View 1: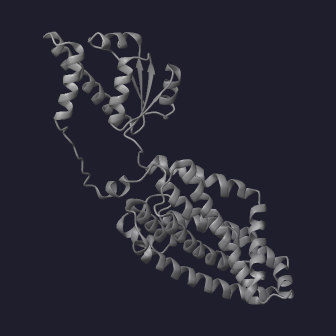
View 2 (view 1 turned 135 degrees about the horizontal axis):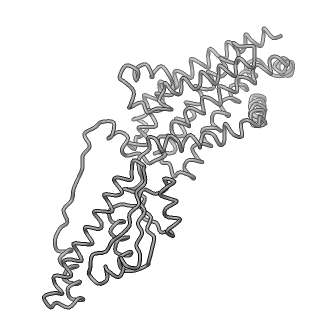
View 3 (view 1 turned 90 degrees about the vertical axis):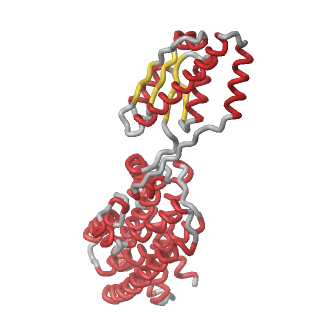
Length: 387
């Protein structure tokens, strides 16, 4: 039983010694997670707002109002604030100068400079700022009205605080009737991109490892392995385990890195890992079949990349399945990626359990058994042909 594990370890070391994998396995997937997240990801807050200017009563009150409204509020200098807005790192920038602070403290109208970005979230953030300013204006007007009739400022503030506690606030619930918006609305910014890039690169990297099968057959490595006290079944099992380990390594890396860097939520981690292992088995069978039926490394590598990208795109890894036309979405289910996509959707968006993703796991397991069976048969024939 040690021989298959030794062969699998050798295959993984050969894969990691390829310097091109440093970029395509470790860096490129995370870059695409960012790209997909910026295009289709949800927002973690109602807006990114940067405050700049003089510290004072107005800035403190405005910060509290914005944070109560769900905005992510940060502070920066005037130039840094403008750069963040210009580069899209913030939706709105607010400049509160000394004159605004003094006017607010005196109960007079205060002018605030607002700089809005050109992104899709800037309009919502701008409206959030206007709402917060209107709330402050109303509160200041109430306080001024009480003090004008002779109520001390401290007593007027206490009375307004008591009134706010006694009166239940009005709650507004917005229900989006669009099914696509409902489906994608609960996602974090990078949740969708992390799941889809995991599926695409697990399949793509594993399929690319089919080239090592051709090289080992051409260089006589497989013949020398069989000349050792290793049976044909052990040699095939070792090749199978090697590609499965490559798939598992790629997927686990993307999963851990996206959780640590982008705070991605994969739902139940145990079930997400189980889904990864089953999907990796599908990729393993496809890699064995490709490496066994082709004899030229360049052609196999080109086909692996092309096939991996086409199947990934068709399976929803580059464009959400929810946005596909009905006919194309049905066709997409010939790919394992579509089944993996929908299983991750259950885990991430609906807090799904084992029974919720069981149908998807069953289909992926059937695909894996079919491809591994054909791959093992083709590998045995290719080894016999090479000898």
